[in-house]
Length: 93
Image (tube, rainbow, N blue to C red; front, side):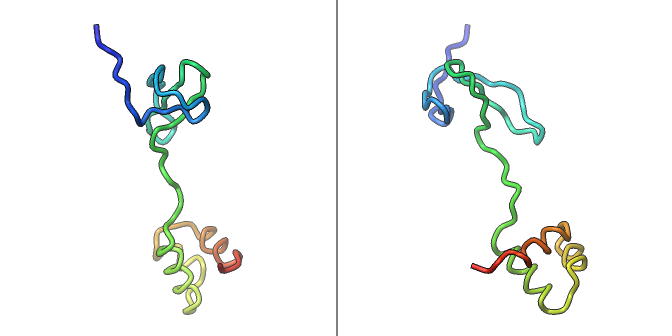
């Protein structure tokens, strides 16, 4: 019989307990899910980020303002043209 290994990374975001955490399959992107046996909360240890970094965003805006269309920027950088248009509409910080 295996011993339960307590992993410090497996901490429930709801009840903040470390013990009683168990694997619960994978989500749609293939990342391991964990379930807390105390509060029944399901969470992901290391969720994948679906955001582009700030450098990519600045590069896309630079290419767009240099005269390339939003669709062209999307093709050059391999992203959706909607991302480029949303960044253009968003006020600059």
